[in-house]
Length: 68
Ligand SMILES: [Zn+2]
Image (cartoon, rainbow, N blue to C red; front, side, top):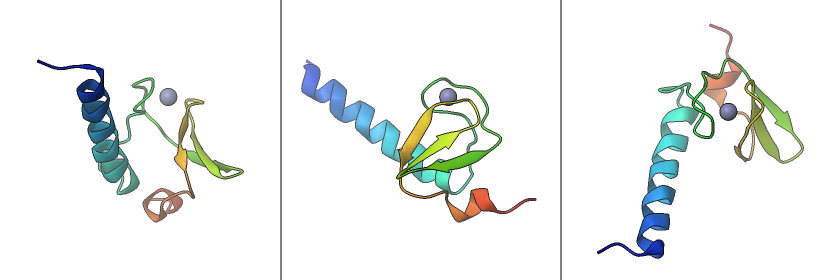
């Protein structure tokens, strides 16, 4: 009973949940390739991860700026 729209909605929901956790550094796994992300880099208006994937538009979250 799922059409393409429902599949897309589920994917967006998953992604938003991942972004939420990722920004708080509750997860450090890239949503795109599944590799562990060790560093985020600001490139223009977007944030790129150490694995090379674009993560999202915006700035590097505070949790990723701190060197712990
Ligand atoms: Zn990646």
